[in-house]
Image 1 (tube, rainbow, N blue to C red):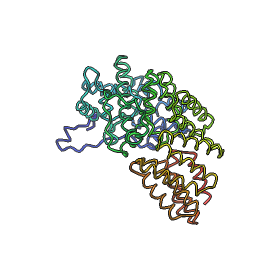
Image 2 (cartoon, rainbow, N blue to C red):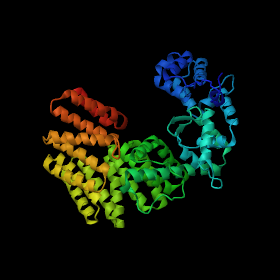
Image 3 (cartoon, helix red, strand yellow):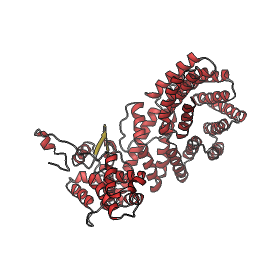
Image 4 (cartoon, one colour):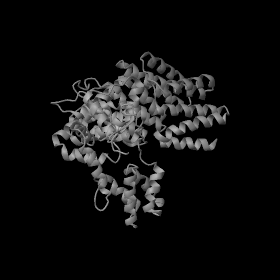
Length: 523
């Protein structure tokens, strides 16, 4: 027998239960081509989008195929656009005028207990497709009858058994692509404006609380004094150490961005810029450049609207780094200069040093080495004058990079050793690992292959797991190890390192991936 439900009772009686999944992507496209013919072959990207919007469900893909068959001049891309709007595939795909998929989904929904139906439609209101129990607890109740977590577990189990929710990892769930528009429609129709706003507020509070914990674990020195997240907000998802904190940020990067956009639309200005600021370890470690820039544009507007000068300064300097990483040097320089003018007006020496350091880095990237050195030496004096040891160590790293560009490897190595010692004494594991990697590269470039390669390999291991985990820096270490191998004439080892780095950068830095691909071809 078949059922939309999990048939738990039969399983308890010894029945074997087989879960029917969606079609494989290739098979779904083949089914679409039954009605779409050569149009499907001519628009492979649009065909993939159609079957994705259909959730790879045979009924939905079959109906989409039938639509193409009865409209022989309609393009596959036009169908994809139609399915992506309004009520999606469940409302668009019909048999004899009847929305049969929506009817089936409505039937499953109406059979749910009240608590499960409430949670399902509230999930549809959230700007995410990933959920965890603590997020769901934050939206399941209200201020008069908050959920205690145990109720959420039972409700989630009900939705899992009804196949309206699927488990995709430990304590991680998603609504099927086909169901998201259905749940959203129900949430918009059945939750009044006050409860819709409360649902989104609970979601944002959960994001703030968990992002604050991730920042505390991964970047404790980044905390903005006097701006702690109130303890009365939603309970955060527990994060047991750096690996879990970074994994949470990676899994929920689009969730966090959705929350930032929600705050911007709702006028929750303080929450908007605070969440952007708390997500700093996400931007620093994972380098999602487009999200970095969008978040900080929204955060900057929000900080200004809220009247927070510390927030405005943070958004300008942190956002400028994202612009710099994207190669938008002129705009990054403008943001740094705005931040510097604010810091000078406020007498904020630490923020002055941050802005001047950013301007110095732009000079370094555009090969104006004398200007870069002057900026960094100025920053070093400022940071030492206020006892900012971490900042002083990071400035020595920048001075080392300037020395490398000038060909003075001995001076660069001295600066890096000083920076490494200071960062190690401060417990700055991630920053110290970055300096260790750069020192290894400098030593190799200066002819000390044994010490340099040993340092690079140690740094590589640290970037692959633990407190210093970073795919970006893992890729940089691999590239430098490739250069070291190439300089020794070992083309095989060099190719292995370049290929491993290329696999990483294809996902996180397309420009660097292109450079690595060129290097591989030149071997």
